[in-house]
Length: 202
Image (cartoon, rainbow, N blue to C red; front, side, top):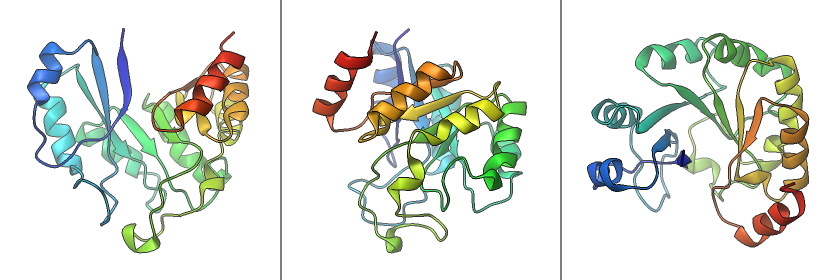
């Protein structure tokens, strides 16, 4: 099955039906990053627009809600109730494996909601482009932090985005040592990723 596990939806998107009916891709995960307030190349879809795309094309567009660590852990329950199937984590104020975030992961595990973690270098957004409480620090999103989460919550599915670039070795080590950790190949820095794949794909 061909899955695009890392897509972001623009406002007023075109050709959703064409993709759903004519693409070799059989499923697209739509990850909500509508917290960006300005400075994006395109205006991003709202959570409601993501859910609407998923309702219109069930089984093809899969909605992932933004896991906002600045809210209480019940944000996970609220996203599930709205119709989100999984969660998107990015720009935490503390490392992903900080135990302050464990109540969020515990709820996600209980509700069977996989989490796509942004790992590695993040886009050059200034604080003015982000909602309050989100960090500009890439080092809080090193892929190695996923190992502690995976061990603590063995029934939680973790997807590490972008192969953790530039920490590719950490990403591969995490996926090899924990059966509930997966990697995605999305984003730039393709030269590095091809080199890592050639070295570690075995």
